[in-house]
Length: 144
Image (tube, rainbow, N blue to C red; front, side, top):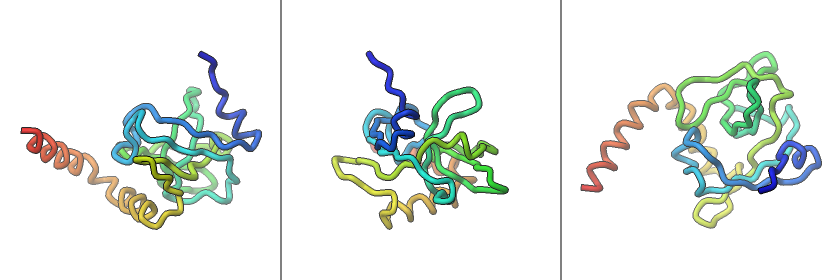
């Protein structure tokens, strides 16, 4: 199978649509189910709550949410994580999620309901482990 160079496509101005792997952005994204659309972006267009594709120092491409920006450096967190990663250099950011496809519907990143979700989820970051346990408890009770 041919390997796709996502960074090259973004540098060429192309829109990349792909499925995600891993649970770091759960519950918004379930691995292999939703597609995300990523486009190249200007650094001055990025804000808290935006979901960006970046390259970790170790070389891995990751899609996480911007927790905050300080002194021109970016600090990231996955929706299913509590630890903030950073600082990241602006050059590490390769693109920004501009939309995602959930249940066959295209949801742009500027959708008001999505932005409310993002703001709420960032606000509750310190409480995520407790929220996760509560959700898991009710899901396990529902299956019985």
